[in-house]
Image (cartoon, rainbow, N blue to C red; front, side, top):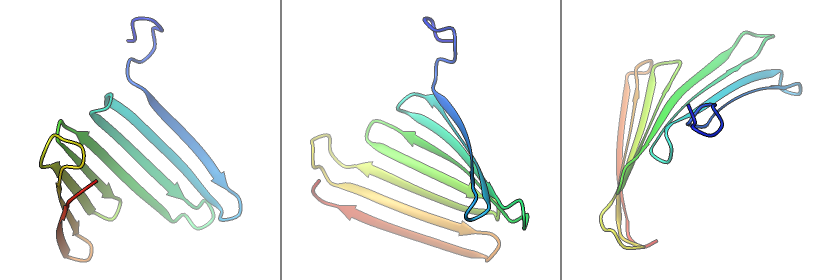
Length: 118
């Protein structure tokens, strides 16, 4: 509980939209577990006419010198990225890793990068 408002201490939102042109219904949820550090979210898109749908669930973890993102979709595909700052000064190099595991297609991908400069 937030001490002043009596409501949730950590912000969250829920949104539902309908795109009549595409016939898509969308539900989105985001919750800050620890503000500026840990966020989670989910998205569900579906077509009421064809019953096709797509589900995504993800999380973001921001640490002192690194950030990690992970996302899992309804088909079993897992995607993740890790960014690590190699220095504390503005414009310090950063090292990036990305991975994708797709259970449905039996495919695994991995990548890395080095960013020098801002």
